[in-house]
Image (cartoon, rainbow, N blue to C red; front, side, top):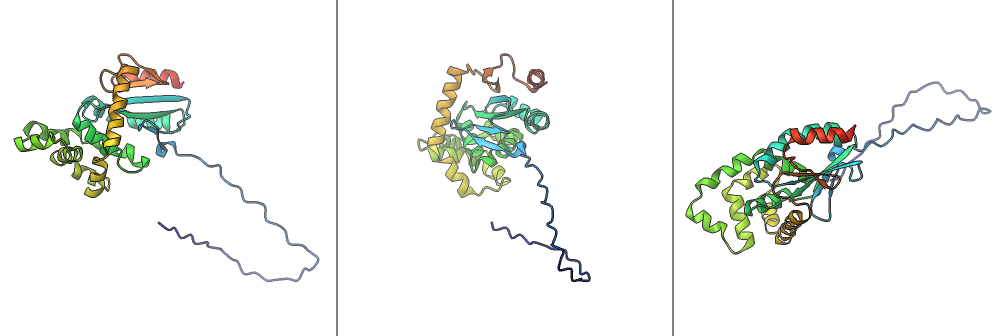
Length: 240
C-alpha cells in the first residue's frame, strides 16, 4: 500500500520592510515526542512456533499451553486478556506467550488456522477460535459416517480440510479476512503440524504438562493453577 503524505503550510502575508543589516533568526528546533511502543500490538513469533504478546524482554514472562478444543482455555481467554492487556502487557510489566498444545486432530486444524498469516494475526485468530469454540465444536456429536471417513483420510491435507469444512471453520475464519485458498495453504502445512506435535511431546516431558491450560511464570510451571482466578493473585504478587 502506498501512503501519500501531503505537507500543508499555513502562510501569513505581511508587509515586507527592507532591513538589510538584520540577519534572519533561525527557528528553534522542533521538539520531538518520545517514541512510545504499543506493547498490546507487538507480537513476536518464537523459534518454537509460539507467539509472544508484548515486550519479549519484559520483566515478567507469562506463558500458557493451550488447546483450542479445551473449554477451560476458552474460559481463560475470555476472562484474562483484557486485564492482562491493561495491567501487565500495556505498561510493559510483563509479556504473554501462547504455546499451542495438541490433544487431537481438531487441535491440529485449529492451531494451523491460528498460525495462518503474519505473526500480527495470531492473537486475533486465537481469540476468535476460542470465543466461537462451542459453535464449531457442536457438529462433532452428529457427524455422518461419510464425514467420519473423511476425517480418517491418510492424506494430511485432505484430512485437515475435511475437519475444517465439517466444523464450519472456513466461515468463521472468513471473519478475519481469510479466503478459502489462503486457509487451504495453511491447512496443508504438515511441517508446522509436525513441529507442534513434537513441541507438545516436549511440553509433557520438560514442563510436565498434563492438561490445559498450564501456566508458567518466568519458565516455572505453576502447580494447581488452571483458571484466571487462580493465576491472577500469583501475577499480582510478582507485579507489585
